[in-house]
Figure 1 (tube, protein in one colour):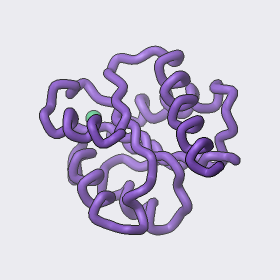
Figure 2 (figure 1 turned 180 degrees about the vertical axis):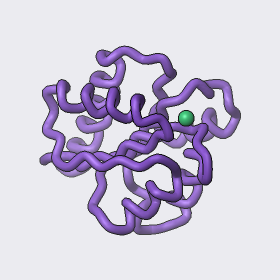
Figure 3 (figure 1 turned 90 degrees about the vertical axis):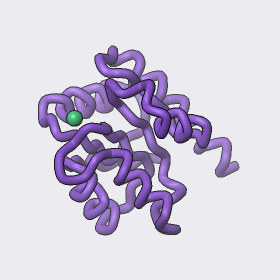
Figure 4 (figure 1 turned 135 degrees about the vertical axis):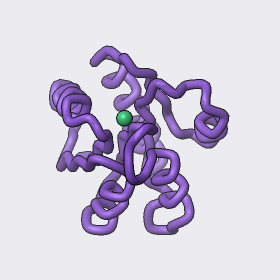
Length: 130
Ligand SMILES: [Mg+2]
């Protein structure tokens, strides 16, 4: 089953890097959407079927943590898989999210790290379906 992915980061360079890595992974990626902040990201979630959100924390207008909070509060988005890619590994809120199954990748990252985490997330989700 192909995964539709939304990449949310205020840096277009970072988005391009993440998307390039996604395309290089030998996993079945469907549509790839992108947004420059949490508010835009939530808008994209309203209009598209997304299976996985890869999200930065520090962004203008709406941060990644605020976006995740709103996703958790909405039954339509609460089950979407989330990977945070950020420099903010020690944030207590991030620690709490990790305990709930949100994955975390530290910036700077290698393509292999992203690939491994994506594989892992997709595998877990396939197991849940069977
Ligand atoms: Mg940022």
